[in-house]
Image 1: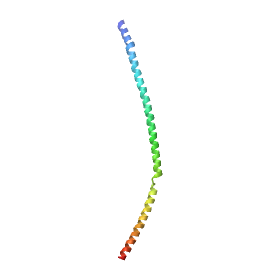
Image 2: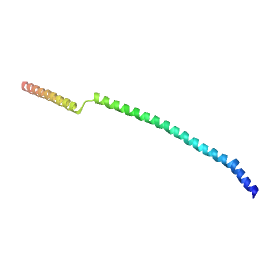
Image 3: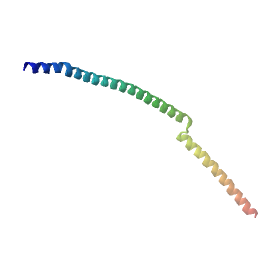
Image 4: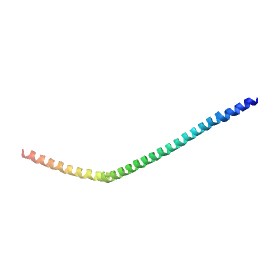
Length: 102
């Protein structure tokens, strides 16, 4: 029994402890590398989101500056309608004048 217990202790000391230590180190290193990669990815993603938000804000400002508002469109529509009605009345009066002279 004494020889087998020494063999088991020797096996644990020489083979299993270094193997388990190596596996633990490998898992720890992989976890650390993954955490670093995730932090880098998160920073890049945050920068991209911030850039997209800035671009959207700039686009909204451009739209607010360059596109017509609803009240402006209603005013334009009213002026065009008035002008078309005046043209129509002139054409009607011309048509009546031409019919009278025929």
